[in-house]
Amino acid sequence: MSQRFRLQPTALAGVVVVERQPIADERGWFERLFCARELESVTHGQPIVQINRSLTHRRGTVRGLHYQHPPHAETKIVTCLRGEIFDVAVDLRAGSPTFLHWHGERLSAADGRMLVIPEGCAHGFQTLSDDAELFYLNTAEYVPASESGLHPEDPRLDVRWPGPITQLSSRDRGHPPLDPQFEGLSL
Ligand SMILES: Cc1cn([C@H]2C[C@H](O)[C@@H](COP(=O)(O)OP(=O)(O)O[C@H]3O[C@H](C)C(=O)[C@H](O)[C@H]3O)O2)c(=O)[nH]c1=O
Image: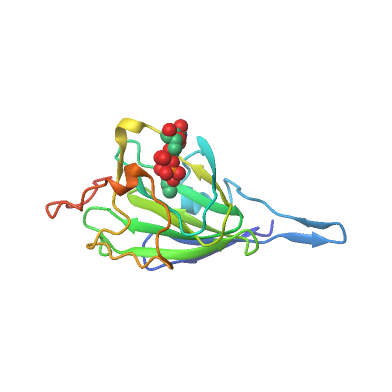
């Protein structure tokens, strides 16, 4: 059976761009958003246990950078269903050769691309349009007590957001700078 997805690796291990391969006909098109068998290499057989959707009204808003500590670390597969975002993964894995490095990808409703955020990476995004809608699959449930966050403008990360941050939740604004002693997450 032909693959319905094309996977592009990035400089961060496990952070993968997934291009959906829609099937078009005279009525329009059909595409898969997920297939456990075809995307086993990014989920490593972990089941999808939670699917989230968010709508962000204002262009320039940043949500994140968030992650969950083991044993609740999750892999996310992020899809933009409306508008456009700049999606960012930050490598927090202890011992990783790209520890504290980040990777960003533009995702839009039109481009059919998704970004995989593997376990041990923080996730955040900036909206590049008003009314940006996200749909993302998670391999772990939300466990508030296990969640942490990094300030999106943490100087040690130096994430190059495409534009000025126009909106940030009070929680995200309140994340302290990364502890210099932080050696990463042991998964
Ligand atoms: C993530 C999550 C949140 N919530 C509740 C907690 C709050 O009462 C409300 C909004 O949560 P939060 O402000 O954390 O939402 P975002 O700022 O969009 O955070 C999310 O966006 C960043 C980019 C992510 O990668 C995570 O999925 C998630 O942290 O929904 C739930 O009930 N279930 C959930 O799975």
